[in-house]
Image (spheres, rainbow, N blue to C red):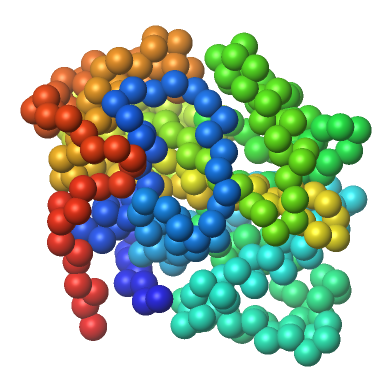
Length: 358
């Protein structure tokens, strides 16, 4: 599976980011109908789905190298963004094995894993890495095992320990937090770290989600889509860095909304780990500007209808209130009133795929 990587992107000022035609068509658009309501919306995480973003366990796309470089830069500035509590040692190795195995399976031209007993050799071709290490011995790796492998995958990761009929956030590699603080949440129980989502809590959604996840089985991962919006192609909108990105919310105008306002979609996948019984949670983030999304007529129409009719309490929770009217007015110009087809995938032949240069 060949991937054409963008090598000159920045997810902080001065921003440089854009999706190719192929990346727009593979975007995991989160709305399966012309309205939205909060739900658990879990489904099996198979290698099938309405766009190519669903075709691997850990999706690798054209932004891979730039996102890994951005993570390394932020971890150098804020090392606490990767923290694992001491009792999660086995879960770290579980996660490393799972991620390496799945990447090598889905992208054999990009990643290889050779095992001779406990002596493993990992080759990451896009990042130019090759390391031989002893599985279970952290001294044989340049970083602790969870940090080592999560530096090489797109999206954020958490480790959740299951005990006393609950889940606890006991390990994180989070450099793209969406309006929360990973270091503040570390060690919290499931309901504690979801506390700010009052709308979903009042609906009983987190009670149902916890009961579901406590029964998660090894080899049967699940996934769901979540969404919000962000100004500029900025991945890190963490609570501690609000002074950096918060003022962006006042910058949206009718003239720049199409290029500056991004739909931010999280493809969230969860895996039961075999030795530790912990859960690995991957929050894989995708960004697309309104201009890019509206190149798919179905998505332009549907996004207009979803945002136009969004319940006020959801608009407030997702932090959209300040610029929502501007976004709705912009999207209205792409809504011709035609019906939209079922599901989240784009209609066929909407865009032609960009050819990767040699």
